[in-house]
Every structure is written in structure tokens, then in C-alpha cells.
Image 1 (cartoon, rainbow, N blue to C red):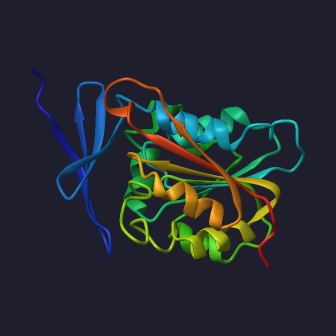
Image 2 (image 1 turned 60 degrees about the vertical axis):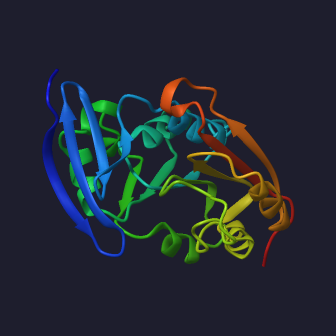
Length: 225
């Protein structure tokens, strides 16, 4: 069997160590030694973008935000779903992830960072959202494992009812919030709805590692001011 090669590593303050590995044609990113994401399966990342961008190709001047660059698959799916005049902002906390996507990871998703519609923001997506007011037609979050079973769903800056209500302020009327999650958190649906969204849970339906992944879809039913 072909051994894994460690291509690079980077410390991300407040987040941990990221390492990039390759075996043959497969690439993985590990966080603190544990596999975080890999090129061998990305069905759920594709679904995150296609569901978030439904109906947007026919609109003029669309602007969307993706939280988390990863291996570039969510960005590629969003670009493929949108028209030529759209803008896609990507907030990525780890500068190394951007560098890797401009280097060895670029061909995996067809070099989406080279698309003129793409704008990269090396920043925490929570900061980007906090500064937005009716800016985005869709916001996609794929920055961690998504909501979990903890009281604040694992990341209170993104997934608590108060945070979800704030995110709604960054959406234009009719906008969509889509959240990637590693697994089920049934109580999150109620929290999503308490925050003022018409919300649903979508199973990815993939095989293997992606089989249990979830995409949460929410659309504000009342503007939060």
C-alpha cells in the first residue's frame, strides 16, 4: 500500500494544528492528528452548496458567503450553481488552507480560487457575518462538525438561537442559511425554528463516511432587526 506523505503543517491560533497529507490521488486534512476532511468523499459538501443556491442562477447580482474553504468542493459546487455575475465570498480562518488550495489541492475541485467570482477573506466567518446587513442571498457554514448535543450546540457564536437570529440579519429577503453537520442533532431543528427560520434537516444519502452527514436548511420567515 502507498504510504501517507505529510505535505505541510500549520498552527492556527485558537483552533489547533492542521496537517495536509497525500496518498496517491487522495488528500486529507487532519486537525490535531485526527482526519478532518478528505478528497475521497464530498457529496455532502456539494449538497450544502446546491441546496443553498437553489433558484439563485436566475437572479441578478447574487452574493453568497461560504464559511470554510476546506478542499474547495463547496466553493466549486456554489460556482457551478450560480450565474456569471455572482459574487462568492469565502471566509477561511486558516491561511494555510488557502495556500494549499492554491497549490496541491487546487486541481481537486477545478481550481475554484482562480474563478473571478471568488473573493477570499482570511477571517473568522462569525466576524464577517457580524459586519453584514442584508448582504447575502445565501450563507453556507462548513467550519466545524456543525451543531452537536451540547446546550449551545457546540459553537454558540454560530449555532445558538441568538447567533442564528443574528445571522438572519446578514441575509437578503428570501435568503437561505445552510449548515453542514457531521451527524444528527434532533433538538437543533427546534432551536433553528425558535430563531425565526422555516427550517428542515436533509440527509445526504451518500455512502461510507458521508452517509450520516446532515445539511440543515433555514430561511428566515420574519426579518430580525
